[in-house]
Amino acid sequence: MTAVAIVPAGGMGTRFGADRPKQFLELAGCPIIIHTLRRLADCPDISRIVVALPGAARADFDALLERFPVGKPVAAVTGGAERQDSVRLALAAAPTSATVVIVHDAVRPFATTALMTTTIAAARADRAAVVGHPATDTIKLVRNELAYETPPRLTLYAVQTPQAFEAELLREAHARAEAEGFEATDDAMLVERLGVPVRIVPGPRWNLKITHPDDLPLADFLWRRSLQAGPMDTAP
Image (tube, rainbow, N blue to C red; front, side, top):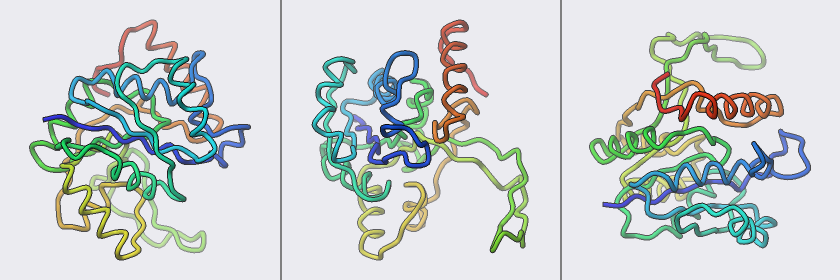
């Protein structure tokens, strides 16, 4: 039973304010997206990777892979207007022989092979699994810059990627969302709408998503620390 990885990388990184999409910025002399693809390729459960890219980046992506080999087959599709659209388009291009689909952010380069393997195994057992850790900050519900409710912190998790799903379940979830015009912030939210519970896989806090300019120096620090201490495959 093989898994296919989907990497939504269609964003233009407008929040980052750089001269190119943030997934193509360099970390330790290599584009962030290449670090992420290599992490996925290192996972023995993953047989193939499908990347959803901005249309303007498609022409240069093959040359990027030639310069920075990944180690497993990588297919590219043009992404959509939103992350959800990009995942759906990549899912349509994924081989139907895959029994599990693992979705991972292009700008989250520190997820380890052990974390991916554990998440895939959890999805095989429970149909859906996501990486996350308990919230440490108090979270407020806010409307018009006024907090009106505080959910109990013990019930809250900060959810990351990778997220893994039974392949047909994820296809059904995306098809229903598209038909109903529903937009979600992650794929687990789409699966939850089908009444399927999602297993939480404990994840490390250093599984950083590089979203804002301040995240890049932190990513550089984490990268240098990993070189000194060895692979960060330990629990948080």
